[in-house]
Length: 529
Image (cartoon, rainbow, N blue to C red; front, top):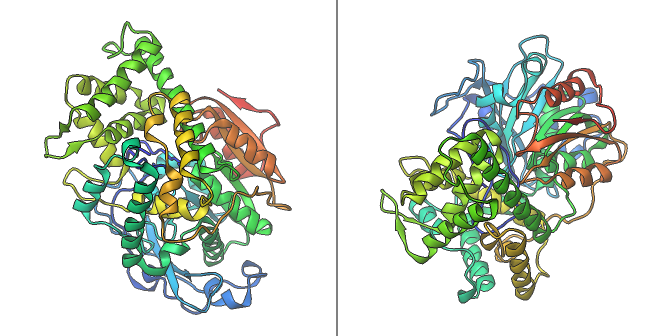
C-alpha cells in the first residue's frame, strides 16, 4: 500500500486492485566488476556451506562475488559510508538450472565488531527493495545487531536492481493509476481481467520469462544461494510483513539451513486473496477509528474535533466519495482519483507516529487541496516530485502475488459477494479493495504457489512477532503462522501499527535481540506494550 521514506514501514497486500505495497524504495545502486553483474568466479563457498546442494546447482552455490561501492542517486538517510553492493547469479528457472540465469543484487553493511556471519533482511512488499533498506539501517536493526552481523539486504528477483521488470513508462503508469478499479456499472471482473492481461503482456515484452519466475519459492531458493555465497552454513534472517512469508517458505524448503529467524508481522500462507483482503480492510478500518480517537485527544487542530468516531469516519467517506462525484485536478494537471485519496489516507495508518501527517493531509483535503494525499499515493508507486517512477514496486507486487496465489476458480458472482462483505467490514476502504482475483485471472503467467500450510519440520526455532492491532498483517495471521510451523514462538506487541521491531518499543527490541545475538527465545506468552 502506501510507502514513505522515513521512518520505514513494511506491508503485505494480496493483489487487490490498485492499492500496493509499502517499503523503502529510494534510488539507484550499482557496483562495478563481477560482483555487480553476478558473473561467477572461481574459489567460492565449499564444504559445509554447500553440502547437500544439488549437483546441477553447484556452479551457483560455489561462485564468488566482488563487493564494490554503491552509487546512490539520493541522500543516504544516515547510512554508514561502508555500504557495499554486489550481484549474484541464480538460475532463472530452478526446474531447468542449466537454462538461463538472472541476477540478484545485494547491499551489505559489514559488522562493526567481529562478524558472526550475515543477517539477511527483507523489508516487505512483495516488491520492496532490500538494497535500499540498507540506507535506513539505523531504523531497521539495533546498534547491537549492527555491531554483530554483516547486515545484508537484497532485491528479490524481478525487483528494482535485480533485473526489475518494467511494464509501463512514466506517463503510461500515471494513466493506469488514474483508472478506477472497481466499477459495478462496467462489469468490473471482466474489465480488470482485460486490463491486467494487457499489463502483463507489456511486462513479458520487457522482461520475458522472468515474469513467470518471480514467485516466492524461487526467491527463497535464491536466498539459499546467497547464504552459500556469503559463506554461512545457516541462514540468519529478519523479515518484515511479506518478508515473513518469504522467510517461512525458505524455512519449509531448507529446514536444515535455518539459523536464527525472526518474522515480524506474520503472514498466514493458507489465506485466499479474499480472506486476506477482508482481514486487512477490517484492520485498516479499526486503525482509522483509533486515529480519530488519538487525533481528538492529542492534536490541537484535529480536523474531526467534536465529532463522534462514527461521524468522523462518515466525513472521511464523504470526502472520498466527493472525488468520484466531481473530478479534482492536481496542480500538475493530473486527475485526483478516489483510489489516490484512499491510498493517501491508508499510508499514515501504518504507524501512530505518522497520525499527525494524516491530520494535516485531511485538513487540506477538506479545504479542497488534495496535494498531500496525492503525494502519498504517488509514494505508494515510487513516483517522485518530478513525475519519475524510481522503482518498480507496483509491477513487482502484482507479478509476485499473482504467481503465489491460485485464483482461477473464483467467479465474478463470488467477487461481487465479497465486495459486499468488504463494504460491511470496512465502509471507508472496502469499496476500493475488491476484485483482486480478477486481476490475477488476467495475468499471463500461471500461479506457481498454493495455499498449503508451511511447517518447516525439523528447523531450529523461529521467532514470530505479532502486533495486536496491525492493519496490514493482522495479529491472528501471526498466531496462525506459529501454529503451522513445527518449531516457533510468538512474541506479542500490544499496540497499533504495522510490525513491531522498528516501532521503538524496548521490550520488543530486547526480546528480538536476545534471540538474534544469544539464541534466547522469549518465554511462552510474552507480551510487550
